[in-house]
Length: 228
Image (cartoon, rainbow, N blue to C red; front, top):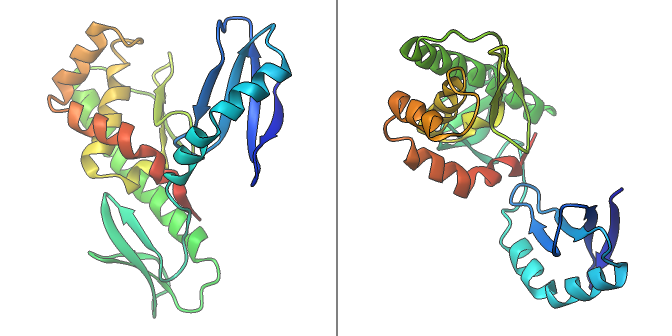
């Protein structure tokens, strides 16, 4: 069972996880939410964990300092949609509207973040449904249902029944990144693994997939800094 200890001042919460498979202490700082975790071999003691963390404190704080700051989605905030920054602005409108440089929300709206999130989810579903259908037709394998979630551990998944799941936050990324994730998950309809054959399927659907894949690995964590 995981336990949490605190390191230094100001304190940093560190989650300790014992693992029968671990052969050494393994430290991780999540690029998504900044959570710090330390995996220990089964017989490692709390004293060993504390001593190890003390030697790594500067490294941990350096990583946390580089974490993107949280952005609250309210009027005046800047948020990307399809990779393009848009300013959230109040205006005389009854519905959320996406413009070239703005996201328009109703005047005096105290739930702007909630309404913008609902709008973005709908937009994400439309874009992902279109991309999935396009790649599935190209592959010659139909898919089942599409569902959207706000997942932190993965950007998409494909079940053995052919159902596709995506993170709606992909709508914040450049369009090519959303397309890549759709191609990746659709390719699993043919290869339910990450073998060379699978990556050949991805390349067949999207020959230039490496560029958006690298963008997502480098910048994907920052998509979670927007709080709605």
